[in-house]
Amino acid sequence: MIQDIRKLNNRVYLEPFLHVLVWSSLILFIWHTVNTIGPFRKQDGSIYFPLIWSTGLSMLLFYVNGLYLIPLFVNKRLFKKYAFWAILLFVAIVLLNSFFDQLYSLSLFSTEKESFLSDLLMNLQSKTVILSLSMGYGLTRQWFKNQEHQQKLVQDDLKTQLKYLKAQINPHFLFNTLNMAFASATKSNDVVTADIIEKLSGLMRYVLYESNEEKVFLEKEILYVDNTVNLQLQRLSPELASQVNYQVEGDWQSHKIAPMILIPFIENVFKHGVILSQKSDISISIFLRDYTLTLETRNAMPDHFIRKDAVSGIGLKNARERLLLIYPGKHSLKIDDSGSSYHVKLQIEIN
Image (cartoon, rainbow, N blue to C red):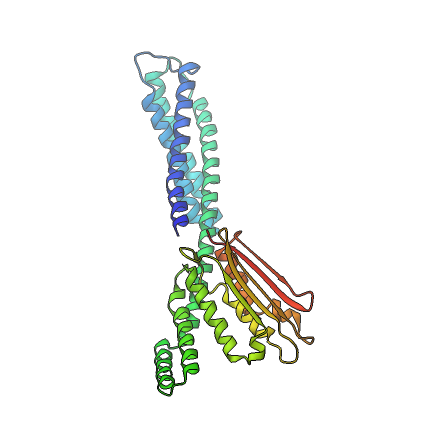
């Protein structure tokens, strides 16, 4: 979030600074040219007012075209209307600048007389350059706005889908039901059932409420994974549970991560890795080193298993898309199912 604010502030200040720099450089260039080789040589006059006037007309052409006409017409593919109004604006600015030069600037400040036609051609050349730069600026600016709009649509769509999924469940009803079951299990001294219900309630609370945030504390995400793994182990027989190797290592304090980013890979292990007819050999390890979080899972695959399903399942597909959106260029996901086991290695930079 802090990085996004810094980027926004940089863009807010950088663009106006560049505009001021470009226009100031143009004014200084014209002023220097006119004072050294141009016809403005009267010592008792000033070229500042005609210089500011001409530059003001150039800025009017530049910004009206770049900030108004292009977004209004080009973005809607109304090219004929854009061409009409752009040409009309261009001709009006050129004529206005030329008449001003003849009636005011040249008569008061120039030691040489210049014909209206030559002055008109000079303004045509200079304003054509201004119009070309304006078109490049306007089209580039509009392209960036369209890209930002597309990214916002994608993010809004993901949020809408998440809200839709959560809306399928009435959380208050479920929590009340779980609390009732927990109280009943505790009253009956059924410690195992009470523990299962308590862990399940914690999982649901995390999914429905805390996962609304863009980032959560890493220790909460790890606790969610812990509860998930423990619930999975409790439903397995002691023999199958003994074939699961789960280890966690690292200092999770003060770090944040996107919620629910690890759990699809954990669920995938238990979904496809628990095999009754052969040894499961499930391995799950999570460790944090040098601001890089690594999740590595490995599980055996049955002989009849269709490998394509493990790689292209809906859960893993959604996980890939979220990683691309949230951690572009800051994550690595490798999936290997070429042998008798299914191996996943996910690395995320969380600094």
